[in-house]
Amino acid sequence: MLPVSLYGASGTELDNFFSVLPTLVENAYDDRPYQETLFAITGNDAIKHITIADSWDHQTPFDWPEDLLMEVGMAVQTIKYPDVGLLEHLMTLDNVDCRRLSIWMHFETNVYPIYTKEACRGLDKLGLPTPYDPNDIATYGLYVQRIEGLKLHAPAEGMPEIGLPRARILQLGLERY
Image: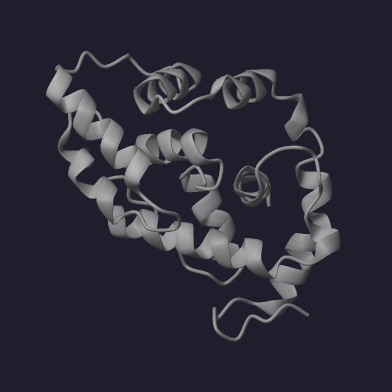
């Protein structure tokens, strides 16, 4: 049994989730576009990383002025997991929401989970109500905390070692649960 009293999660659901997680994500490593994107992120050029992440997500590339490029790059490189507060001001940019920010941060750091409605539904099934609101940084912050709690308390046999970030494994597992 996982230590769930602090989180309010259903112990039965958590046990069930982690028992089926390996089968839920057994084909995750077959996602070539994700793998290629993951391994294309090298060096310290956050703006290049954002461009690569946006390409993976089929987003229209940004055409930002130099001062905005510097601000975005500094925010993405300065933030420390699991905090999301420094990202809030980036949501004032056109076509930027928590989902898109989560993709940038996932590929930049490999620890931030990608924010999806389906993963939030999976957390709800575990007894961890997690709203999905891509325009509210606080809901993404809650999502990050919930995923971190799962990562920290995952039983060793519940987390398959398939060469992908744990945040991605949990996100996909929750989506498919």
